Amino acid sequence: MIITRALTIACLLLPIGTTALYGQQLPLTGFSNPNTEGAEYIDSTEAPMDSGAKHAGSVSQPLRVLFIGNSLIFVNDTPRLFSFIAANGLHRRVVVGLEALGGGTFEQFWNWDKVHNAIVNKKWDFVVLTAAAPFPQPGQSLDTNAVYPYVRNFEREVRAQHAQLIGIPTYKIPFLGPRLQGQIDTVVATLTRRGTKLAPVPEAWDAVQRTDSSINLYAPDFIHPSPDGSYLIALLLYRTMTQQSPLGLLHPAEISDHNAATLQKIAATAHQ
Image (cartoon, rainbow, N blue to C red; front, side, top):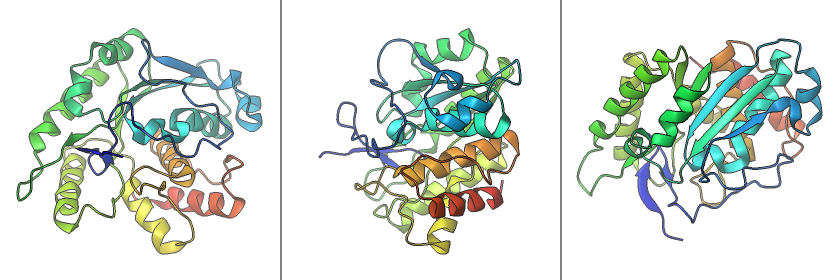
């Protein structure tokens, strides 16, 4: 399988049309085609998963979250997974939207009218963004101009709609190498210093590997997240948005009770 050399702040991504959807055994119906016209909106009260749906509805205004990104978020259907655990924890309706493009870069998303229409034409509380930057040529450095200006642009646009942007900086990819990984870590640190709200995915990912190496966070390609990895990302988004502990939240049947408890504990204590 050919891999597009593009970085999601820390992640190589597969090109459009060849993205492998790992973890489809999760008991959550996936988006049938993330690249179809029109954002796909999911209301957690209408989805067939027990705990989250039964608790939803006690608050009249739902939590609304738009996801913009690539295979990092549509593998294992992270938006829907997030909607269930958030409804379970908040006892509130949760509505999510998705605008996705396999291997999509910051520049591509910024120049995509569909993304801007999705941000402007519906009311959101949060907009979650993950995108790619061009992979540098051998001996060259990561082009930060392919990241920083677009993040700032998205922050301004989302803020103008009275919502908050949250970025997903990705975990370490084993074969990137220390030099490139160091450059990526610098980009993440700079975004944090500039005030960009980021879910603490890299820190939590490392903490899981230190705490319990039996939990496999990677899909078979060692690029995309496994079901456990996607669950960890959803937990971190929940904590980042709500400032509430994810301890005791529901988990899909594919994830063991032991793994879920470990991931929840680490998500609850990850530095923000």
